[in-house]
Image (cartoon, rainbow, N blue to C red; front, top):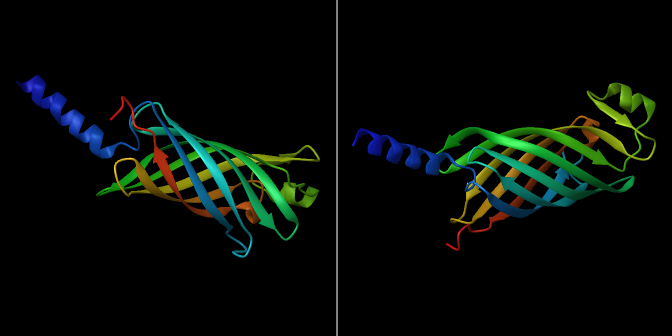
Length: 169
């Protein structure tokens, strides 16, 4: 009976604290605004994979419409649960970002971690994300994306994500 209670408690805690179902695939779309200039907007399409309940791999393709033109971006992060508040969840993660903006030598020197091959810029990405459930499969998602390729590329996003049901339910 003790083993049954322990397993039952583990199942309940695992269900309550989980980002997504283990093995789940999640897709989402988000609108983005640059932190330093809110009038520069863009968007992204995301694909998530949750190998377990506590971490999620996120790949995203996005664009930012800046005063210098449209800047395509590609980002990859891994996020883990930082904090739960009732049904809301805050996750944090690190990853890699690549965009098509050319960084000047001064911008590369001022950046925390960035390098450029002359055509593209590469750097680190720190993502702090909030998930708010709408129902079992839909969630609102907001995030702050700090990008080491320069503060002018850091964004705040708001969007919606959908988790594909596993096992047909």
